[in-house]
Structure formats: C-alpha cells, structure tokens
Image 1: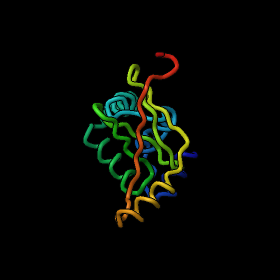
Image 2: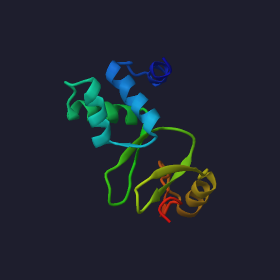
Image 3: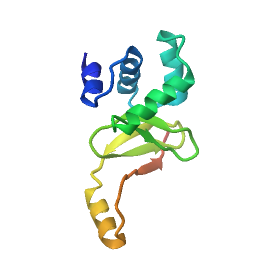
Image 4: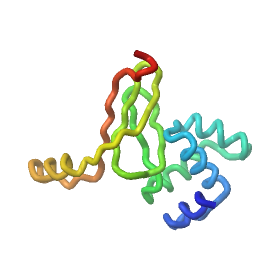
Length: 132
C-alpha cells in the first residue's frame, strides 16, 4: 500500500508494474536496469525493456527516482531521498549511500560561478571493509 501512495503522491497512476518497480528499488537500494528487468520479468512476463525504460523515465521526470551514474558501469536507479552522496567499492562494486548535505557546496558554486545548479552528484570510490 505504501508504494501505491508514493506513486499517487507524485501524481502517477499506480499500475501493478510501477508498484513492482518501486518495491524492487526499495528492497535493492540501487538497481541496474538489467537487474530490474530480470526481476520484473519474473512477475510480469510480457513486459518489454522499452516499457520498463518508459516507466523509469516517467518516474525520473517527476523526481520520484533518480539515476545514479557510475563511471565505467551502467547506471543504477534509486528512489529519491534526502540529499546524499554515494560510495563505491572498486573491487566488489558495492554501492552505498553516505550522509552528505551538498547545500554549502552548491551555495559556494553558485556564488563563484553564477551558474544555476540543477543537480549535484557525488561519487566516492575506494575499497570496502570486506574487500580490504
């Protein structure tokens, strides 16, 4: 029921496919389109990759989800949440959220560059405790 309300809050029709997409993202935290497609096909065998992309782009356009670009890899998707950065293990590929409020960075950037900032994306990479 929670996922249905989330979609309705963003003024999106709560289709069974969209509910399943949100549920998978909520469970996974960050998920690639390939993994999302593989999982969603188990429940909705007739869904096409094009339909999945259409739903993903619709949810991105209303800021319900966001694309996390990872250098050298396919992007992953997550439900939009409070401002944060990402940390990526270069060995195992684990991607985690880390607390970070970029407001000071954005304010300083706007002051020094006179740009209108639309998006801030910070990716930190290293080696996780399990791979050290």
